[in-house]
Length: 196
Image (cartoon, rainbow, N blue to C red):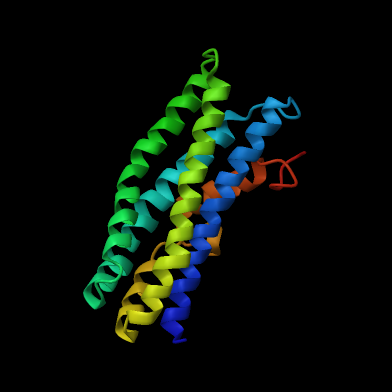
């Protein structure tokens, strides 16, 4: 595997793991709150929802659309149907995130039944995300590995390297670095570094 291909795939998978970790933490912390094993920390939850919105939706997905998907469409028609599905899921993301923000806001405002609504929305969003990420990793990336040229991988690796997500090891972007540290430090152990 070329250095650029390895680097690009490694960044994409690391960003997927970072997104998965934040979603898993939201689900786990909501369960802890519902079981009354911890108090609700709205600042932490808003930070996690903001992370999901600000990093994957605004940086990761556009890079997939503009670089990985676009290059693969140039090289083979075999991925066209899958790419269309994945792009439509990317376009549905803002609506799903709006639902998360609405239900978290209702819960914070004390609206009756809002905890259950928030849990259902988070579960639905998590399921949607897992299906999407599995399709990218198990179906799209193998097609990309089989059909993209070294020059394609050079461009894709360069594009993804610009993301600077602190959750995958880069601290170049001060906003995401501060957000990451806030999430990690406020999340109770064993999910984070905060007090249990």
